[in-house]
Length: 164
Image 1 (cartoon, one colour):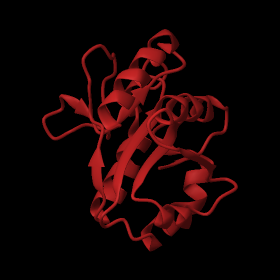
Image 2 (cartoon, rainbow, N blue to C red):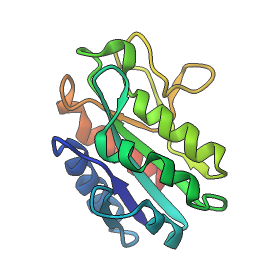
Image 3 (tube, rainbow, N blue to C red):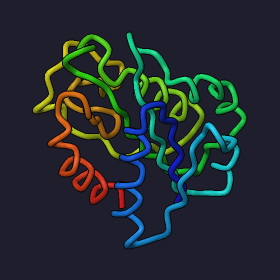
């Protein structure tokens, strides 16, 4: 299994390490920072986790933005993909987890089988591009290290159990 992430403030990287530590009990997890590794490495794996934070007003994190067009060159068909995102639901409630939604939409449209939806219950935000059509689920794991860091450990553990 591969876990690819982009991180400017280290929170997405810390989450990647926590996710890998839990999942590696059952299978090896190879960590890749997309600032240092081409997204093409995903071609070597059938199961992939992608980690992406939302920046400012619903923007992509800089490392993801730099490789965004390269995602299209990866053959996602037959790959199982789970995505986690970081965002700030209090500081940016209108754009909470938007980058997660952008990335999910991209890999889903390219043929990936996506897993790992999580309920929106318990979050406080006004809008998000990372919601299921019925609005009851995030399209991946939504973490908020700014406003709810104390809930991240349990959210990660629950999500890892779901996608393992």
